[in-house]
Image (cartoon, rainbow, N blue to C red):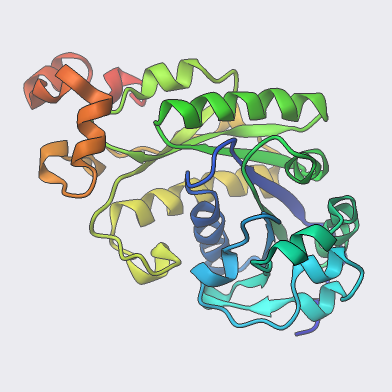
Length: 294
């Protein structure tokens, strides 16, 4: 694949979070797929150098990777790979040898090249507070933070906010994934000194195949990602700030946790006595999440 001919620099959005497994890659994939549907040339870079999984999640075959580029053994053009949903990706390798040879400092040049040829560059980062995760924070036009309601994930994301500020990173806002109706979203939002952009609901109807917005277009999670992307387009192309966006939320996305299967045990841990709350009680307290999205 050849690089598109484009004269204006694209928007670089780094998708970050302090903990692994919170949905950063899923978020990057689905935002990218919606952007492509809307006519924007989008590339996703797997900058999770230690635990790369972008190509695997999209079932994409590739020859060259971001690790090859950062090791000085390949070029950006050679690593561009076609994937589902019309996406273009730069995949990463899953080997310790490749990780050891990759120089994160060269990532800035890679992103600059892509920025000059794509409308949007989505940078999927790894977990933790290492050099490889710090570089994408400093080179982005904007940072989207992703966390689950898990306490450790929230605390680690707060640390990521502090780290981003140290490298003069511009944070767009935070997204909470795997949310059910009893999640204490207001309490989580209070821990961030950044705008809460919205939530992605737990959705048992969505297939595991990515992108959800294409494989399960009628699911609540897909609708949430579509709404999120529409709001982010105002940031990418109109210069809006995160606190000027409409929060992503629909009350109809949320069901009683007792009706779910795989998340029941987690819900019991997180919600405790809140599981006894009835629909009437929700209405008296301004609905789901206490009117936060009212």
